[in-house]
Every structure is written in structure tokens, then in C-alpha cells.
Length: 235
Image (tube, rainbow, N blue to C red):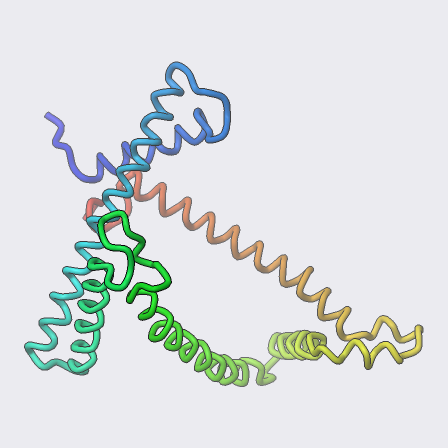
């Protein structure tokens, strides 16, 4: 007797979704026969994924409360930040579920402009995001200084390309290079900057995306076949 395991369920659902994407693609004609079964399974699985996502959020919140609550009780390192995390989580959760300040009831919009939840996001979360991104500028500048130091021909190419792009992106560079003679038109930094962004940069981005896609396909095949170690896979 075959014993069903979570890996079997994962493999079955994944294979059905992959086959459905080829047999009953969205936006096509009304599927018939076997294709209609795969289309029905595809739509049902999509609904189930939404239900599973709700339980995943619940488990995530419970895990957050348990982890940070244990750190506060044991006075572990930086436990005061755990208090801030717990208080923030509970306050936002209560305000969002209660829909304070906005339309009441289950059908009310929790993100209404006059709701407290919207005010929390606009007055607390948005300034925190702006602060974080402003700090990232200094980290990027520090990392660029370390990366652009000339240690070999690769660093020289990186430094030269970066300088061309930076200079070519200056708004006033166009008005300055317009005064150059026509014979020196090929030296315009804005043209070289645009070429670097469109040709080598685009080629590199596409190569990275192809590599990421191949990695995702490989990981998916390993998970479907049960070769991936971890929960539900082979030990």
C-alpha cells in the first residue's frame, strides 16, 4: 500500500498546473474534454492558494509573536527591539481588523483615506522607507568606492563605464556638448552613456534573467521529483 506524503501532493499539483498551462492556456477558446478538466483544476487550485495564503499569514504572525515573546521573556540580545516589534504588530493588527476611523463592517475598506491604518502607513511607514532608502545612498557610495578602485583591467573597465554613465546622465551635459564641432560628435558622453545602458547593460541583464529562470526551473524539477532536501523531500 502506497503511503501518501506531502511530497506526493506537491508533485501532483505541480504537474497538473504545468500540464494545464499547455493544454488550457488562459485567454483561449473554451476548453473541452480533458482540457476542461485541467482548466477546472487550474482555477480551483488558484482559489485554494488564496486560502492557503491566509493560513500562512496566520502562522507567520503566530511565529512572530512566539519568537519575539521568547526573546523578551529571556532578555536575549536586543530584546528591547522585540518589544517595539510586538507592540507595532499588535497595534497595526487591531487597527486593521477593527477598521478604526474608516467604514465599519466586514465590507468596509480598511485602506480608506480617513482610516487610522492609512494614517499609520502615511505618517510612520512611509517616512521609515524614505529614511532607509536615503541611508542606502551612503552604503552604495561606500561600496562603489571599494569596487571602483583600480586593481586590474576589469576594475578599469568598470570604473570607465561608471564614469561615462555618470557624466552622461548629468542634465546640463547636452547643452555643453552641443557647442562641440561636428567632427567630435562621436565623443559626446550622453551618446556613449545611452549606448552603455542599452547594449552591454541590457545584454548583462538578459543573461542574468536567463540564469535565474534556469535556476528556478531546476529547483522546480528537483522539488517535483522529490530530490530537494528539506521538508517533504528526501533526507
